[in-house]
Amino acid sequence: MKKLVHRFRTLPIRSRLAMLVAAAVAFGVAAVSVTCWFLVQGKLYEQLNNDLQRSAMRGPDQRRQVQIALLNCSTTPQNTNSFVRNAYSQVVTDTGKICVQDNSTGVVKVTKSDKDEIKKANANRVYYRNGTDTDGNQVRVMTAFVAPTATTSGAVGPNVGLVVAVSLKGTQDTLNELALILLLVSGIGVIGAGAAGLAVARAGLRPVDKLTEAVEHVARTEDLTIRIPVEDDSDDEVARLSRSFNSMTASLANSRELQQQLIADAGHELRTPLTSLRTNVELLTRSEETGRPIPPADRKALLASVKAQMTELASLIGDLQELSRSEGQRGERVQMVSLQDTVEAALRRARLRGPELTITADVQPWYVQSEPSALERAVVNILDNAVKFSPEGGTIEVQLTRGVLTVRDHGPGIPAEELPHVFDRFWRSPSARALPGSGLGLSIVARTVQQAGGEVTLAHAPGGGTVATVRLPGTATAPPETS
Image (cartoon, rainbow, N blue to C red; front, top):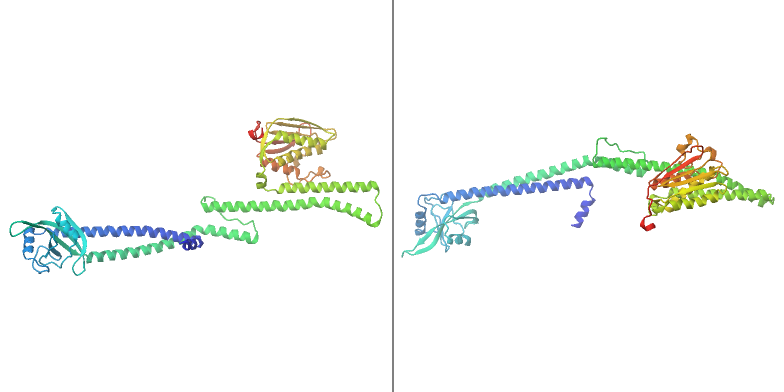
């Protein structure tokens, strides 16, 4: 059985559907055929029973005919005129004595149930059964009580019954022909249902075949531009699957394009510090090889430049690692975070990086669902931008009220045509290309804020400068586990 189930599961879907349809139709046809056969059998037997009852009750003086049969008792048919014609007819006592009536076709085998029925002496009851005659022919038998016998001394003798029967050959032939017809019709119906099921399965699974071909094409060629045509008004499961596949390939193509763009941008950004670092290292190496020392001031400047370039490379690599982390890795670290504490920690770092600046802060309690380190990095990046573009001795204003964090500087601001690009990866304003940075800071800010369910914007500040606004959903009261 397990082997059959395993073989069935290994068949193609269309073959399994055709077999299931054929099996369902076969079950239905079999049920209808069997029911029909039994109904016809019941009707035929009912007609035989009626014929037997009419034959048994024929004649004006049945009791006298029975008495004559008992007086002239014979165990074989006599072929004389009788009230029962073209059938089996015999008188039977409850002791089992058999007297065959005139013109009976043969002798019916009497069973214990016949004798028991006669013993009951119920003139209003008849008993029907299937039996055989002495030659083994199948017959339909009716047993009916007639009267008790009388002995020569006047005493009451055993009960007497009439047993009549007709041959079942014609009925059985009819039932056999009906069974053969039903079997042929059922077979044709099952074969037709299997063929129809296979045709329907092929038609229904044709979109799935197209989907399979598309998937195999993508796996073979890595061509993510392929699309499966779907009718706009179609909303069945296959259409939904096709639309999902098209959406998936579009997302994968977009992801690959972004990945290739990220690699290209990263290569471009890495080339500048690496070239500068290589040049400085070659100068130091050549000085050592030629024995011509570099002046101390120039050597110190070269080493400082190498250190700055290595720091820039480390920062760029860290930003790239941050952007490459998957959603699942982030989801494992998400927890309830105090935004107030995060902003205060970022403010301490910002004051160290811009000691000549005045940074004012008004932060109120607010708790959000986010990854602590990613959220702190995002706030630090916003403050770093404000510190980087603030003039010497300038002021930075920080405020956190009910989940809205604003950071306003008094620097040169961002041109209106550049505002749509400030959150793009590796994008840097032409005026800021000489400043340190990788162009990934605000991209990390936007990604972190979006993952926390918030939004971030940059806009011109009244009176000059730039204001960064971060809105994060959360609550002003500390949850029990953080209190």
